[in-house]
Image (tube, rainbow, N blue to C red):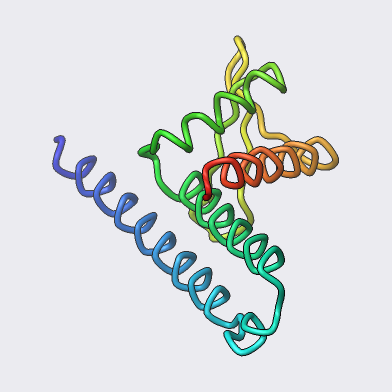
Length: 137
C-alpha cells in the first residue's frame, strides 16, 4: 500500500533534483560568460562590486534551490521577515516556470504576484548584496 506512495515521493524528489541541477548549470554557465579580459582592465572597486553581485546571486540561487539553509541564508530570510512582517518561501514549481514566492500567514501560504512579488525580490536582492558586502574583506 505504501510502496506506490513512496515511489511517487521518490520520483517527485528526483524530478526536483533534475530541475534544480539544470537551473544551477544554466546559472553557472551564465557566470562563466563574464570575460576575464575585461575584468583585468576595470578598477578594483568595480571588480569587487561584480564579485559581490556574483556571490549574492549564488546565495539567492542557494536560497531558492535548496531546502537546507546555511547560516547566511537564514540571516537574510530573518531580516526579510522582520522588514516585511511575514515569512516567505521561495521555490521553483516542477513545471520549470519562474520562482514562486509564498507568504506564510495564519490562514496558510499564499502566492505573491505582480508588484508585490517584484518588491519582495528587490528587497531580497538588496539585503543579500548588503550582507555579502559587509562580510567581504
